[in-house]
Length: 429
Image (cartoon, rainbow, N blue to C red; front, side, top):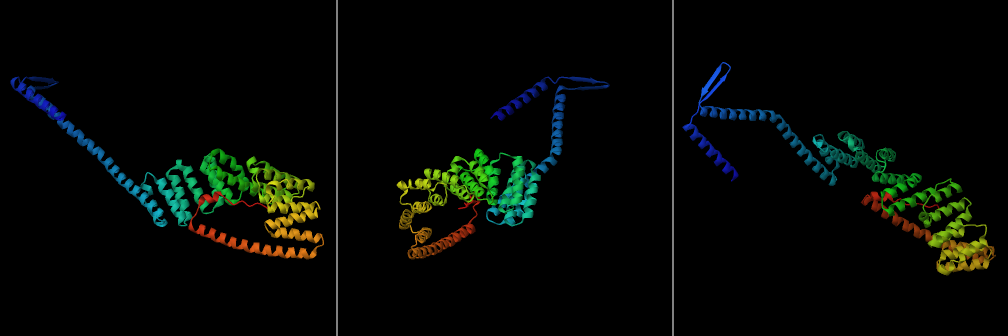
């Protein structure tokens, strides 16, 4: 509507102008130097309009000529970009379907023409890793850095992940240490370092990393607790450490970890070996006062304090709440033997067998009967204990085979990378 009104207005102006010029044709006289031009006003106006139209057409043609090469380049670039985008999508689909070699070819073919060459090369590196082509993997990672130098952290993280997956622990450690220099507070770098230290059982380094893992919240609190416990148990089980080193490791732990039964058991076992029985007794008794644990109770019976009578009194105080504990009764029997309370020891051993027959309890009772000169009953207890030990060993062997078979099935079915962050800690009990 608006254009129609403008057209009507222009048409009316043209008609009015034509009528006006027909009635009053006018006269124009121009003198430029030696040149003189005489014409009517209508002709001058027509000439000016024609000149303007020709100039406009000429400028438009000139602009078209100038823009044509650029438009051609833009069109070619757009087609290449579109092909590379489709190539990235196809490559990722091939990877998702497990066709690694095909994915690698598609991704690298279109990488040079793509605005996102970094993504092409990173995906190609993962495909090469799955195909077992580790040299090509490293080549693609290098190409990714060259394509986008600002993405050094992202590329190095991918490199560290792939090296860990290939169990190249030394290379992965070098990559992660370099990353710590580039991004010292990067949570994922800390997470990968924790995984590496756990896999290589570098417990000292893992222990030093725990505070930063907590402050950066790189993992959940539960997983960090598992790692801290594993690091502590690993350090406490290191061979060749003396009592001073044991105490330093133990004191470096948080109070919550020091009161953990697993930690207390490993610490007490090493103290017993290092002739730190009194310290072990206090630690085990403290933890048992907070949380009852049958393994710690058994350990308490192995501790040889300078005052065995007082140790027995402490243990008997637990009878009120845990009088049906077979391990407590066994421990009390051992402590009574140490205090030369033969009759009382016999009662405790027989009571423990009545609650739960265990091979070690039969052997303790048999030793006691030997000391008392009751050789016939002692032999009977030895035979019963030996049969119980064979029965327990056979049962443990069957359970162990079942557990191994189950672990093999799980390992063959899937790969759970998070499980690498949850190492099984072994105590030196």
